[in-house]
Length: 282
Ligand code: SF4
Image 1 (cartoon, rainbow, N blue to C red):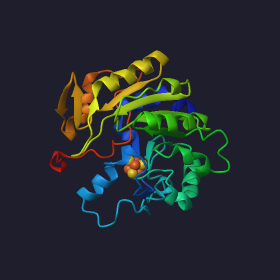
Image 2 (tube, protein in one colour):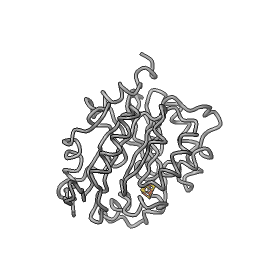
Image 3 (cartoon, rainbow, N blue to C red):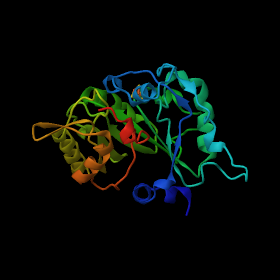
Image 4 (cartoon, rainbow, N blue to C red):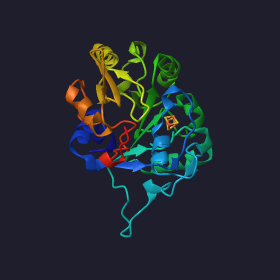
C-alpha cells in the first residue's frame, strides 16, 4: 500500500478511532502572538501560566524537539515511526511570522518524511502563500492544513483565502466557537472535514449547542464530514448554561453523538492539553 492510499481520509479517520498510538506531536517552536478574538484565552498562554513559565508566551522560540521528525534512536530507526499522524506546531502557529527563519527546515523534514502525515492548524492562512517552499506546487501529499475560525467575521475573511490556496488536504476548525457561523459558502468538495469546539478555561466564553447543530446541518447538506470535538467550559443547551469540567468536555461532546461521516476521535487543536483532574481550575 503506498502512502497516499494509506492516508486517504477514510483510513485516517478509522485509524484515529482505533489506534491512539499512531499519533505523534511535533512542536518545533513554542509561543505565539494573539491575532484575533479566538486567541483571547489561548491555551498556550494558559498552559504556560499553569506551569509557571518564566518566559512570556508571546516570545516564540525553537524547542529542543525542532528536528524530531528526522531524529533517530540508537538502533538508527526513526524516533517517529513510519505511518504516524504528526500533530504539528500545537503550541504556536506554524505560519507565525516570528518563525519564518526556521520554517524552511521544517518543510524539508516534512518532505523527507513522506511516510508520515503532518497536520497543522492556523489562524494565519493569509500568510500561507508566503510560507511555502519553492517546490510546493499544488501541495505536498502528506500535509493536511486546518483553517481555524471562531466567528463569522473570521470565517468570511479566512475561508475564501483558504479555498484559494494550493493545499491537497483541507479542514475547517471552528474553535473556540464564539457565535453562530454560516459556513455554507465555503463547504466545497475540497473541505475534507469540519470540527467545532467550545472554549476551555476559567474565563471561557459560552458556546451554544444551537450554533453547533446549525453547522452540522450545513455540513450534512453539503455532505461534508462533521465532528463535535468538545463542549468547552460554558455550554448552553435549551437556554440553560452548564459548566463542564475540562475532563468531561471531550466525552460530553462525544456523547451528543452528532458526528457525521467521521470517526470518534479526530483530533483537533486542543487535544494536546489533556489536563489531569488535579490541573483543572474551573
Ligand atoms: S494563533 Fe493559536 S496559538 Fe497563537 S495566540 Fe492565537 S490561539 Fe494561541
